[in-house]
Image (cartoon, rainbow, N blue to C red; front, side):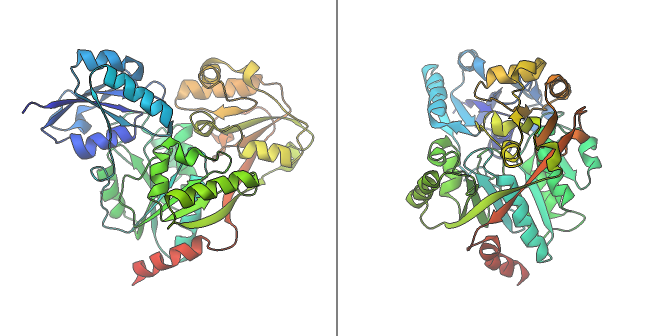
Length: 445
């Protein structure tokens, strides 16, 4: 029987993981290409031979997803595996039609062949969309576990934007480690809050190697905490699965891939942002949870915000900077920075689009729904320079930083600025302490 030729359609994350766990040492299949989307400048590179294994001594080329019809024909591909996340069902099936029209099969892989088993207890946190509040939920879970004297090691869904070989296994235990691994703004936004709270966090490319390193961390490990990305389901088999939903985007929990998967497999569902969402939208989300996962425990929660210096906002014409992916493929129109601007009395929220330069101007063209605020795009040095230049050019009195990191630490901001901090606050019961009680007892017994 001849080998099946496979193209993996991805975005430098789930695609590499599916390859590593199922295809890398599989003699019945030959992965002839990856295609890339969502992540700038990933196409034109290779998945390196050092990571691809003995069956791929030359590595595997990465192409633009737009080339998919040509690649299927030129490489005589039998099957295309869709392997990235936060996609509306309509777009997933549009890609399926492109693949089928070119003659290949279209595949969505489940967790049976891609989830790895840990020797440690695993709590996984996912979400139905980017920007639901998954990271603050992860931090809240870590706080509860640490309050019970448990050593928590966090592992973040991949964001491999640089040297893939050097990023095979990354361990972050101090802020200086962010510089050591040449992290982008997007990576720092996810890693820094864990480090600041005293957690070691791992990330990288090869998630089995990462898992084994985390299980044997030199500082000890009682619990693995999977900090998911986009709306993907976990790479590790969870003992407890927590999924966050967003009533600002009602219905998305049943219309995006693979977000509905994370909802259906959840043991606990957190309805976040109840403090700022419309009541009818909250009820829509509640009904959808009941419809597809009636056995899940539901936690109501608010996304509470604090501001370092409200005087920088009050009465000022402000530029608001928000988390980049939340605004772009997460399709959110507001974030914590906008909430803070309104709550603390900004006189005007200045639109940065007329002042945008370079890669930031390109981001506005690619994502025309982003309006009235600035996405903190920083996938590389050029984007970070253009971000700083856009901030400098914008005609405003001050800047609100609504990103999870101190942006002023990594780029120059030549205007008065203040940070917005946000955290998960459970409302009533059950709360996170309630749902973790049995889990903690099992670990300690």
